[in-house]
Amino acid sequence: MLQNLWTFYHIMSSDEDQPVVEDLYVGFDTDMCLVATIEHINHENPEYSCSVSAIVGNDDAFTLSKRIKVSMKQLPDAISEFTKEYTEIVNADFKQVQECFKTIIDWFIEKNCPYRIVRKYGKHGFICC
Image (cartoon, rainbow, N blue to C red):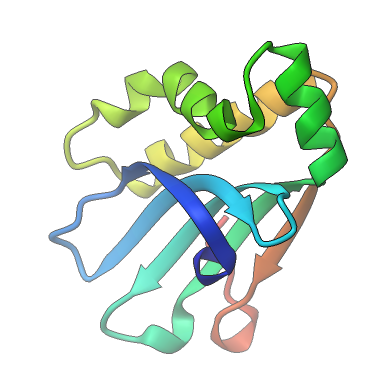
């Protein structure tokens, strides 16, 4: 999903010295939908790489930006601000990356912002979370 984002903000990564890494990003796709995505990257067995994304439609993203009084462009920064505690974790594990993703989804729910989940599966239907 990351390759579909035209602008994004890196929130956090799991331990990058490991053969399998999870990265969490938030940004906008080419349709101006707000996207929070976990990229599960398996460097040893790339066919098991996958992703999960929470996608907020562009109209709903615009409504969200008005609701929290920031511009659309500032939405990724606003999300990074309330997930700041996660960005300070050194050598995070998958569970911590996924908890941060859940925090973002919970925020969407709290702000009454509809979203949909989109998954990109790895080999044999492997999913990261």
